[in-house]
Image (tube, rainbow, N blue to C red):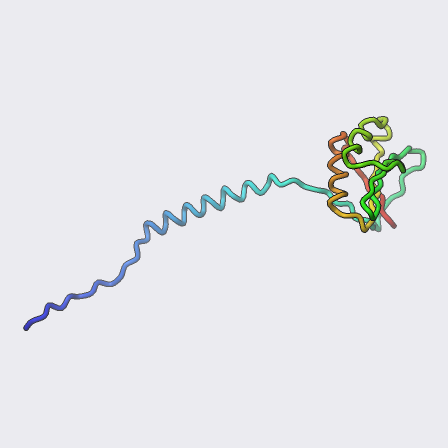
Amino acid sequence: MNFAVRKRRAPSIIIVSLVDILIILLIFFVVSTTFKKDQPEVQINLPESKTATKAPAELEHAIVMVDETDAIKLDGRPLGVDELESAVRNLSQTQKASLALQADRKASFGTIVKVMDALKLAGVRNLPAFTRE
């Protein structure tokens, strides 16, 4: 009895479909990295500074304070985060221009960000922070 012996072909990899998949992945990564630029930025002023300068005493500062229990005060008057925006809008232009943030080191970061957002909504553009020398 004669058996027919088949010759085995060498396996081949089809590269055309792999190139298509590679190009699609490349397009996906290029497009998805362009969306990363739209993330909001939050500027953080640290509580200690070696280069802090003293402001002249003639300026009438309005001070927003956040203590360690996350209580918010505007010039010593206790306020809530909701009331802060309207209270800052009612300040005079000179006080609004010289408004500063004084936050305790142990205050929660979330409360400080809420305060900064409320001040931005109220029209405060430049917000310095009080620091220790």
